[in-house]
Image: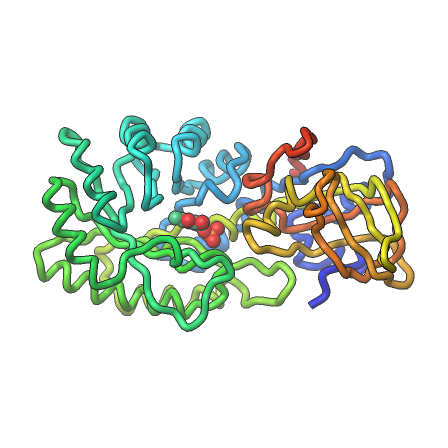
Length: 389
Ligand SMILES: Cc1ncc(COP(=O)(O)O)c(C=O)c1O
């Protein structure tokens, strides 16, 4: 698929639905406009939350704060009634600042330091995730508080998510009963089950398979006297970056059906989307700050790079569409970042028309796993957010 697109072709397209195309037009025109800049649309945050809620009517959404912890995300989502999923003390603090009720927040990191665990319990979190006996042993620290524990399991899939989250976490299904008994011994409650297929999971059959597995595990656990109250189907809901993917309502249809067919109505269902909510509300605007011709390619040096917003290319294995407003014949080009490191190259081999220093280049869908994993390498300033609606 084409990564680089002319602004004139995409100004009406869904790719730019997270930003006002007239604003982008103005930024292309105004060479002096400050950059790098992250345009953030509050209405798009709300739209994504509502769209996913409608597509999965049985699931309560807990936004995965790790995807983008900007206060505007948390404020908008909180006012929509969204709940939160956290994995650290700092994320807990951010949700509290947004006004979230700590009782509704879940902590779903399967491996927590004792310090992180203590901080989360002290803050009032009661729902946690474990996937192994050593983590369960940490529960003995909390004698006077009753915690609700979910067991995270993994399943075999024929097709993987782009970011495989079953590699690092999740017990095998035959370990679930043993872990449940161990939790019972600690005096805490075996509250539910959870899985996380992976991020940018484009195959809904993986969720269906995991839900069918949950059904069997629940029957077995209930046969042993456990009262399972919750199934957490994780995050992973995909975003259309460059390759076309199914609309989210179609993607979720088989998942919603599997929940109805296999999980009895008394069991609460939750999901933990990050990317689906966070990606499209943010659009990165960069400027060309330098230019050189090397080895037959035109190199453009932008004012944001791999060490900052484009860190998602490294850590999230993601590629963002490139939008330019220059016309003319495409030339073999490279887009590199502003640091002194040769590693700081985002796109090598793009065919784009010739650009000049000062030209703007725009990258939509840069809201998830971009800002949060970037750094200030070379002591370069991170881009500011501009709230656009
Ligand atoms: C435990 C957990 N929940 C939710 C998410 C969010 O996943 P996504 O952004 O793919 O929806 C992640 C991502 O790493 C995760 O580890």
